[in-house]
Image 1 (cartoon, rainbow, N blue to C red):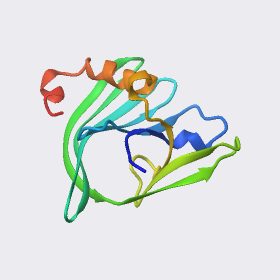
Image 2: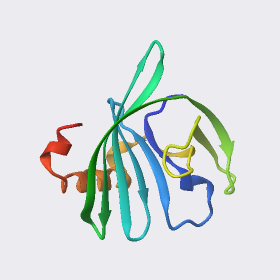
Image 3: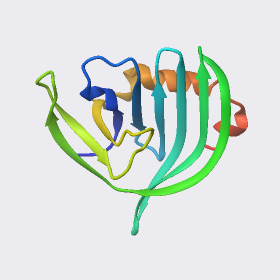
Length: 143
């Protein structure tokens, strides 16, 4: 299995009004997003692998309320991470691919179910791209 795609912590819950997702784009850029009915928090990161392991290097964090930028901060943080992938039957009876990190990625979430590998038609990725158009250019240049 590979990590390309949009992975959601909400995949395991029947009815949730908020969600955390991890997006691996197939390049070295990725996103972590927490969202609910009124706000969205986005963490943009780069990821790479070397002989010592795999790393996520955070570039910046930004928050939006009602679709407007409310906070942005450059963050320089690199963390080594490990993960495992497996399949699991969820409450709907559907078997989904799961990625589980060795520590929480955002809030308390470390386990995510695959939503889609089709990034082009994903509303989540489209929302992230739209929000990133609202941030100053010097932050977009970090990606």
